[in-house]
Length: 97
Image 1 (cartoon, rainbow, N blue to C red):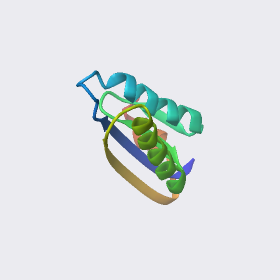
Image 2: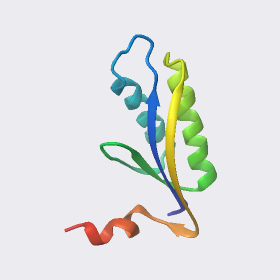
Image 3: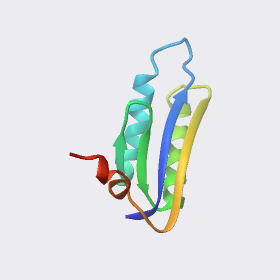
Image 4: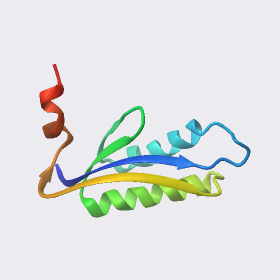
């Protein structure tokens, strides 16, 4: 468990109006490679870890979008910073069957 949760919706602009899903898949691959705990949801992906590391992953995701041909990227993020520890499981356990 880290000290933060970060949810991100990444919206890459595509050159000719192509589908953004292949780009989003590449962004999620950046998260996967990082080794942090994460959960993909329909409209955003939530990561759990150290705040500085999570912001670094966001930066890498944006760089991946540009490197994949996107001229610009919008990243909408939400952050929970809790120095005593932040956990997706703790926040959602009461909603699981």
